[in-house]
Image 1 (cartoon, rainbow, N blue to C red):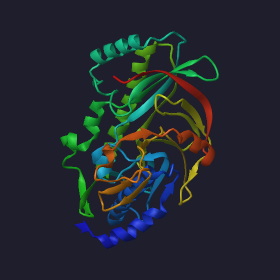
Image 2: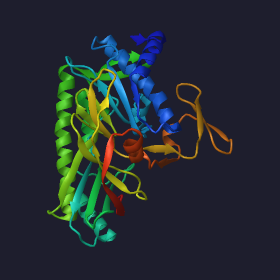
Image 3: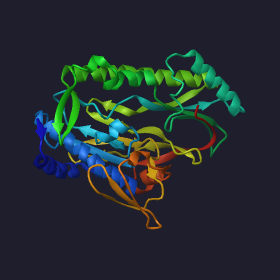
Image 4: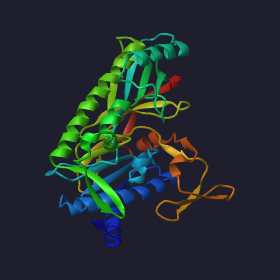
Length: 365
């Protein structure tokens, strides 16, 4: 069954009403919004066709809202730096192509010592050699890294590890694990298959995800203890790419039912902020959620205008009036934004700064 364009156009308009835009609203965020609305509309159509709910999904775009460089995720209509909340209290349902992988961050206070970057590199390479659960590329891809920081207010030192583990992706990415092959359901929506799990299969997948999420947290802390000693004090260890619960999808975001603290990562040449999330976001159905961006997000380099030509092609314009047509946004040159904390604190009034940390060392090996 191919859900036709008439349904899509109507649902796209409804999706726009359930899009909560707390983004930077720069042209990268605008492109991500246009793309994400297509994905949200397809999700809404699937939910309606399955009689799970109508007008049942919200997308919250956070200050790091952007495209994802994961091609399968982007092609399916899922951007990054956002939360997708599905109103679905009665039936287990999981859209698969947002590709949860338990990626997360741990932030620790570490002993006040003189840390040598080459010595840390050597120690980390020893950890890679002896732990078969850590792939040699787990912490050198995308923006995964290990960083050492000094507090701007005192002389305390902190370390942060950001990453995910290949062996977990191999089990959660359903195209890599044949055990899900006969359980995946598909609905043709706008000439593309929308893949999902439902009922007991969705519950089984979610429970497996939760086990891997626990494993990821334990493994992140074990790495930090081997690098910086048993006396580290963990102040944050959580996931930003997966689930808050079975009905709440995290795509580069932290979320909770209650106020919390978290780091917001920026690039190595920017300070790192540890913030308190004090105020909630109110959804259009009056439900509330406490949430935060996990970082700054990609920003297309130099382009200052854009228009969409068709479903896959964009026309970009640069300050010198040069124009470019691209069908491959996710491989365009980019910067990391550095205004996420400012927006979340001052424009949207959601967070307060608890710690400002100065980067000293970064490892990406």
